[in-house]
Each structure stands twice: as C-alpha cells, then as structure tokens.
Length: 176
Ligand SMILES: [Mg+2]
Image (cartoon, rainbow, N blue to C red):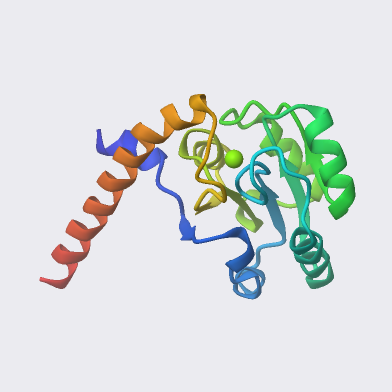
C-alpha cells in the first residue's frame, strides 16, 4: 500500500497557484511550468482573470516557459492560453504522461527543470509522477465541483490524510 500511496505524493503543497514562490523555483533551476487549468488557475470553466494574465506576464519575464495541460477540450483551453500567451495541450488524458512529455518538448525543458502545478491527485499529481517530474498540489479554487470530481475527492482526501500521517511518523522517527 505504501508504494502505491507514494505515487500520489505531491513534491510540494501550496494554497494557490498565485502564492507559489516562483523566485525560489527559478533559483532551483526550474525553467518549465506546466499548469492544469480548471480549479488550478480559475474556477471550473471560467475565463482567464486579470491576475492570471499578470501572473503569466511575470513568469515569462522571469524566464519561465509555460504550458497549460488540460484534459478539457480545445474550445476551453485554446482561448484561455491565447489570453495569457502560453503554450497549451488539450485533451491531455492525464494521468497518462504522453502530453506532459510533449509539453516539455514544446518548452524545451527536461524533467529535472520542470514542475507541474495542479489541484487533483488522480490526474495532475499522478501524471507528474508518471512523467518523472516534480509537482505542486494547490487547493481547488472553487469548492463547488461537478459530481464526477466530487466522487474523486473522497479517495483523494483519504490518500492525503494517509500521506500526512506517514510523514508525521517518519519525522517522529527522525527526531527520536
Ligand atoms: Mg483541475
């Protein structure tokens, strides 16, 4: 069980995509940022906000390459990507790693210089794991979600609780 659980462990956690310490990521050698869209950057189905445009302007100025990686359809992802000036992949079939690897090729980054940012364990975090890259789990922006996502949140909560417990135990063992 432990090994399976490990697949779902994000490299990091953040309250929001907008509060991540991107300067620190840059200093660590990260040059490619892959983003889920729905509930990671905006509420499900919503257009890019002013703060989304400003964030991506800032990231590109800092020297990051960006790529949106969404399981949603083209008509959802393309206008969003155009508004913020980012590369994108739609119908990505996360957690399968193929589109994630294509995103890295498009950005010209390697697995060790790329991070994936998303709000779901079963798509985003698992996809990062299958692709051999770091991941940051953010809290979903909108607590109101469609039924198929609500259903995935139940085992997700259970896994996150187990991961937290395991971490506490290892830290206790380290300190004792
Ligand atoms: Mg999402």
